[in-house]
Image (cartoon, rainbow, N blue to C red; front, side, top):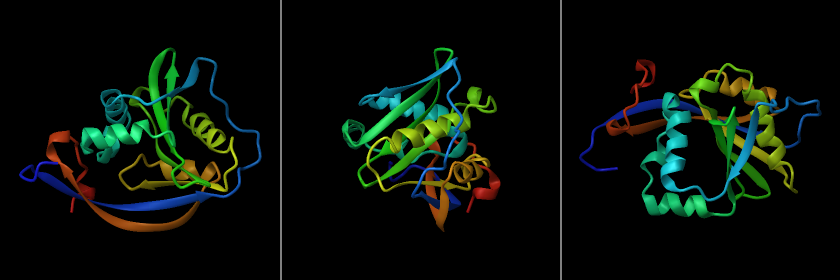
Length: 188
């Protein structure tokens, strides 16, 4: 971020969640018209486009301002796995699993693109991420969400088996050039 660039200060509450065992099934499944593909070492532009399409309404900004070399190193890390949801052949969402704190897997990012929200895909896509993380020998899974995220995010994580471990207040300085429409109730 350029030091002379304008920012908006945003106050959020971040809730951290943990899952130490999977809920018994049955679980929702990805519908026939959808599929999930592992996107191996995506390039910065494609990844940032996913971040923008999914996270723009929810102020996802950190990876969008990360220096190119740093982001490329993250995306090449074999412990980071990006999975893209396709609906009728079009990108519809993505999630990112992070095994750098193994034996726990963190769900770094999870979301649907606006055209896929409200179509009954969220629970099945989240379950896909959970099943993927638990496909190996792990002790648990973590995720966090915040008050800038979709209002159904926290209840969805809890329905899937995550339990709250703590919540903290943070203040972010979000660069104006990202073009967010920041809700007044989040401005500090």
